[in-house]
Image (cartoon, rainbow, N blue to C red; front, side, top):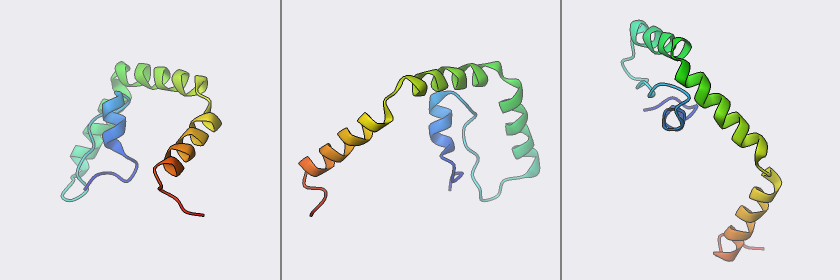
Length: 78
């Protein structure tokens, strides 16, 4: 089981370490992952890049395109 905050996506984007399994996690494992997150500059650099990309996106347009795509596939009914 993974963190409910989608740690796999964070790791793939490079903004954090791979997620830890919730079952059987130790305090030491969690502390090590947090230290890695805080001390590895590449994570903050990647987070900055993701932030800049998100600021350039038009969220409303993306939502409308998603709704149109869903309706076009018959994914919703009136």
